Image 1 (cartoon, rainbow, N blue to C red):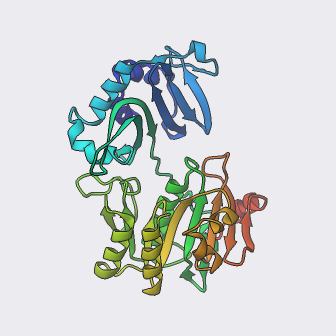
Image 2 (image 1 turned 120 degrees about the vertical axis):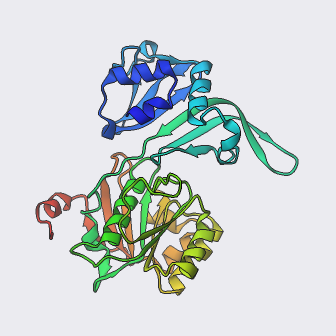
Length: 324
């Protein structure tokens, strides 16, 4: 909480610290010019008043000013916005700890096709959380004859897919009662998975994990296969045509794939123009679908034929009868 506080404008910081919120339950902090300070806490939206109290009434909330947003951006960039110019063109900045800050404002397009973001008016600070053991529920269903299956995690934004992916990587790398430790290659394009600082991951991704930080997914997958001999490659938020081509290359090289994508159901992903072909051809062997209204909630695990291997109904029973 102290690290997050340091990047916030002083007035906003005071409100947040007065709230005495539990950090692991805090998911988002949204700053919008001339609008109430809003947070997502335990999966629900709340406003914060000047005393840090949660409220649903916007007229009671602390109001964020242009100066608050500007001051916060100065802290985020360490008073050097130019240093983050390239990241800002993507609409976000990832800071130490893997926390991702979405940015909105006036977009200026140059003649050469480059874009620039100015007059920043909205910030969405998405807090990264490492939840050790959150993948325990799904691990038993991701193997066939002790071989890890090509796996796709499907989830709406903000529902815990990156947190789940992070713990799966750790368990596959370190080994568990379901498998011996595997060499895992991670392409961490937005620096959210490993939260690398000067190339050193701040999150625990396991002892057999090699990370390409701030590298485009498609290029990174090809590089890892050629240079690091991974057994498994993990990537977050796939979707482009180049991503799909690289994934097929990885699979054809005998490397297992672990990936995430934004979506709500397997059927929805099947109808996507690029990624859908891999689903229809049953390239992925396992699908983990997260619940849209509960952060970290597992809705179901399916195999490539659509058979339900694990569902919300039998989740409680599974947790009571752990294999290890």
